Length: 245
Ligand SMILES: CC(C)(COP(=O)(O)OP(=O)(O)OC[C@H]1O[C@@H](n2cnc3c(N)ncnc32)[C@H](O)[C@@H]1OP(=O)(O)O)[C@@H](O)C(=O)NCCC(=O)NCCS
Image (tube, rainbow, N blue to C red; front, side):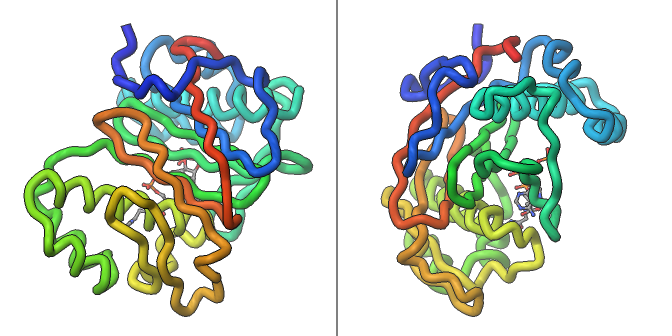
């Protein structure tokens, strides 16, 4: 029984079964539970070193499955073995493949990993929705004035959903740029409603018209977004079978 409730649009698929067509972004939902061993066997020495930092079995399992799955999924596009892949990091830690290969970005929250893959630069963020006592304070601190004004007009569940939409869209954009926490969060605006969009970029030299923002929420408990530096993109959703590297 799958412990993570996923939308039916995330169809079970084997890595490599569907090539990445131009203009597509493939979004893979990866349940981070089950037997981690088949995934752990795929990790590099550097990844195993990172693994040693996790004390709790659950955190270790999530890292093993998340990174093993990332290798399996990317190897499927390249027609190579998962262990053959090499990664490098951008200036602020964003991972890229060494040599030819698609762009990708990984996000994890709770027992779910989300991996987005595309021929254009992208960022992905997934958050498990939970009640936050400090929702208003977090938004006041991190959202732009325009975003906060929209949130402030909402109450109850609509306010919570808008908060998570804004949060994941901002995070997806930051992750696409690769800037990490160095980028001030009030220098760009995203939508908070059902239509995802990057509305304005100040100071970054980016033109929002050249960006796509997509809602890729994988299940009723999660909100997720992908930001890509391309004016149009078609999303294809997949789920990786549990226990299958
Ligand atoms: C590290 C950061 C890139 C994402 O962190 P996060 O949302 O906690 O975590 P996610 O699960 O979405 O993403 C982590 C993954 O992104 C990738 N990543 C790491 N550095 C990255 C960077 N600079 N850019 C893009 N992706 C990056 C890695 O694959 C990482 O996985 P790993 O640690 O298992 O190797 C950074 O943006 C961050 O810490 N942001 C949170 C801070 C915040 O205040 N956000 C406010 C939004 S309103």
